[in-house]
Length: 435
Ligand code: DLL
Image (cartoon, rainbow, N blue to C red; front, side, top):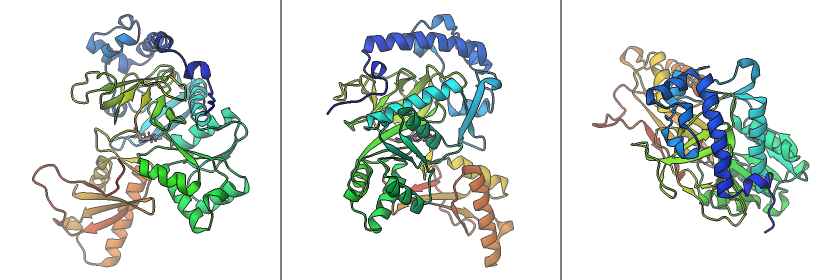
């Protein structure tokens, strides 16, 4: 199959050249961070590492890790490496507690991010002949703006639909003959089901490819989406902390995602010891931003469990490949594409005067995530008046919506009715089969 590349020289670069490029960038980046981010300078000083000790990628292991906890401690500006006057945008995602993660971008950061997403679109067969429907959310979430930027770089006619309003999605898709769809895999499956219900057959749907990510999805789900929409469905990975979508993307082989490793250096570590593991080992994925100016995280622990491979790929790209993430080392859930930590629910309950006795129940019905939270009434709030209970449930659901960005169905249950565990409390019942 003939291949197209958005930046062929980089995407097919030899391993030696790539290492040289990464090493040069790392040396500069460490200096930039050390000089401009006192928080990280302190971490380096504590570890006894100076910028001069980092002469190339082989020295990366000497640097300290960063975690979500550091982002929380340094919130909001503590990891910013450029003056605010040089920053043009932020994006944001959930943090483990009330504090959100806020990532900053200079115009150059956005240009490079657009390139990463453009590489993904071209790898999925996109060109300036295509009509690209972006149905990821626009706003603080990185999905919409990221793929929008990539689509425009490629020269596609870009439909900035954002997520939701499925009737309108279908109207634009069919009237304007969209050929590429970008959204979460669960939303793609939902759009597919809706089209089917409306009597569309795969051959009536103009789409040829989809670029789906932001949440785990299985090979079975891929097959289902491909069959219903009559397309090739490609995976895309990323996280707000490093930039957003486009950290890694799938090619025609559909066997894992090429990491844009000229911008993001990937390591796999043992999550318990922090030791760097050899290629092919399963462990926690760690990224170092080699180019980011405003928010350049070094050795950021993603908590995603993954495997890296340098096996030759038939698409001709030499960029290292990451497998689909196989789970997480923390308790983060992804519900309707939104990151949710049980600790956030707990924080809301405490703030609203409840005890932290709760259970989160997640399921997937008709390709849509359901999200319920059972919360124990406290003795002082206890009432048998239905209207009062409904009002309390509504108010709690609102408080959770403010914290998380998505709406759970809250059910107040009798005090002491949620099973107490002898060991770790079972806070989450996830009935979805995602891995
Ligand atoms: O989900 C960025 C994104 C937008 C990626 C659109 C792809 C498409 P966050 O909201 O910060 O950023 O969530 C990042 O989502 O650490 C993974 O656990 C998970 N994740 C992202 N992509 C995938 C994927 C965006 N393709 C977190 N497969 C990451 C499985 C994914 N999990």
